[in-house]
Image 1 (cartoon, rainbow, N blue to C red):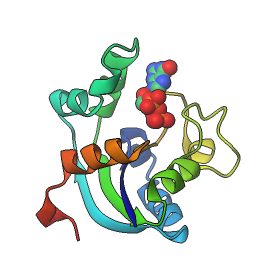
Image 2: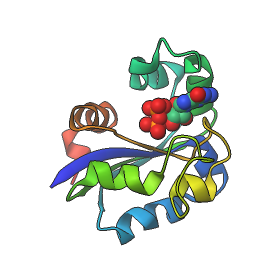
Image 3: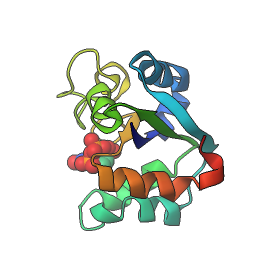
Image 4: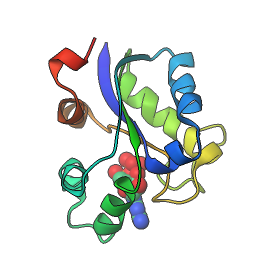
Amino acid sequence: MERTLSIVKPDGVKKNVIGQVIARFEKNGLRVVGLKLATLTKAQAEGFYAVHRARPFFASLTEFMTSGPVVLMALEGEGAIKKVRDLMGATDPKKAEVGTIRADFADSIEANIVHGSDAPETAAFEVGYYFNALELI
Ligand code: GDP
């Protein structure tokens, strides 16, 4: 069993596809073990994406991530980290495989609907960043 952090980004919440994103995770054997709706502060978004601080799109990305409410969720399942990444598709929706969340719902490389942790260490950091032990089942 593995845990990972996923986010329905502000564009996903605005497009009213929260349920469709979660349904894809549930249909693929993942279980929601933590869930909250929140509007991130700039500082929270900057801390979350600290590894990208030097990238040219950092300011734009943190602006986007604070532009409206997001859904934060912890997911559990066998191979959960890779499973979520596979269901999300490539960062750029134009390059995402047919049938992935980003191919189906996303508009751009930045506004790409969904986040998923990319490795065990980042998953542990990211779940802990948004959830404390009492908020996880
Ligand atoms: P992910 O793991 O597929 O989410 O991609 P990354 O970790 O590389 O990037 C984190 C997030 O930054 C992506 O999901 C996008 O929202 C955004 N992003 C990545 N690459 C670019 C880019 O080239 N331009 C812009 N504007 N945003 C980007």
